[in-house]
Length: 600
Ligand code: ATP
Ligand code: MG
Image 1 (cartoon, helix red, strand yellow):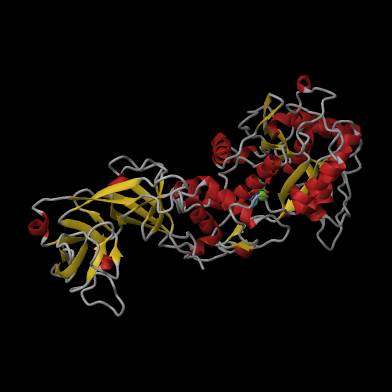
Image 2 (cartoon, rainbow, N blue to C red; image 1 turned 90 degrees about the horizontal axis):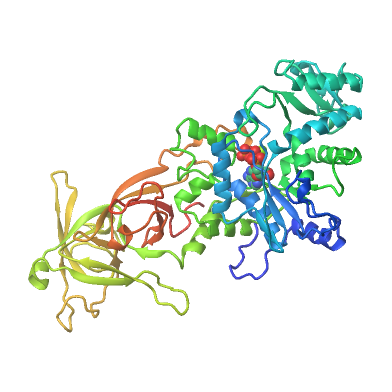
């Protein structure tokens, strides 16, 4: 892991990708590129005009689930590079797998990218462009490309069964065997491929394969499938097609059509790179694509301890109702993190700090929480909440202060307000009865205990010094009320003055003006730091205590929260007013994280 960088670091930390981009810009690798406008839209093309976008990256999710924190790394990287180099990043859906894809996922992905602080609009010389694309918009082109490969003798229709195909592919130590259909004439392949398109053959009965080398040491080069028959309704193209391109075929074409310069993906695609190059090269030779080709670069995916970053597995948690939906605050999805209270700024900061490399590693979850604290420390208003309440009765209140008196108290909402500004002030009231934390009273104090026990004095934070006199209990011996008296100031004789010295100040909420709140305490979803490593059953390490709901009391300023507003509950950590369930008068808070690291 990279050392944390100071928020004020003027320049971004460098990485190998920036090195590559710097070199390409210096050498003018993509200088011949022309402003292409919308891909495939010839009318948009203004020949002769230099491309004002220095680089083009893309973020290409498949709309088959909600994005997670791993995608956040890819988003920050791709959109971040485009932003820093004055280029553009294309938002593109890799929607080549109709059975698993849905409009709901498309919408949620767009929403997540925007929420993280990025966009796909560019504006060069007053010309605004939206760079939102769908692989499915290129299906016609992809089909043409497939026919061109067939005609050039670079692709063939294979009618082996899937089992035969698998057996003949060979493995790492055995070269593959040519299919009996491999030497079929181009004309025949073309006819058969058109039959595939026209729905003349059942699903799975044949595929179109690139004709490369069945003996290649790289199994991905052993005549990979590029088109398959699949009768499925597509979220974008409906029932127009019954054949769909394979991802590995579609992706390089999408990049090339959009004139992507740096196609950045995770390491598992490294072995696909030779096919990527083979394809864009051959299509360029056939006149279907233009040089210079986009180039693929791989980086190490984000692995975060105690977290699974696989859409498929996260979908399983949702489908099996292990969690309460994609946006459950325990989920590492962007919507989950958002609902939990993580801010876009914290996630961006986290992504900057973890950096980008080619070496696989695990990032400690605390890195994300540290970024959150660093973001909220000087932004989140402070407030007092009592999460495990017991009533404290000030038995001499009526006598000293007057029956029913409520004493106004105030504290700053921000201990370190931005320079040149003053902190907003929170107002609350002290009366005869207040809520305190159950753990702040001990009838028989353990050694070193400084809070309430008979005979001990403490300060009610922002209020008066009190002296504990005892407690009332129920039949089971459980404390029902803690008893104390207000201690008048030794010099002035009035309560609340400061000359009485005490060793502790405790948090509290007035019974008169405190508001009942639901507070949801979240903990890690898994007890294993590497829940699914090595194919482990991640459901075996589910944390049974990952959610605890408390009936709490909060001070008035917290009860006035608007949904999504973040606070620091004094002594407990950072909390957010739940975006879905919080209402005026019926507060609901989620714990984001504690004040100190609890992950190690
Ligand atoms: P999953 O395996 O969770 O379904 P995916 O890789 O199949 O994820 P895509 O929708 O294809 O999901 O991902 C879009 C982009 O996000 C890809 O370029 C992919 O490399 C990147 N990405 C996915 N997971 C991570 C991760 N954990 N860390 C960094 N980048 C990731
Ligand atoms: Mg993947």
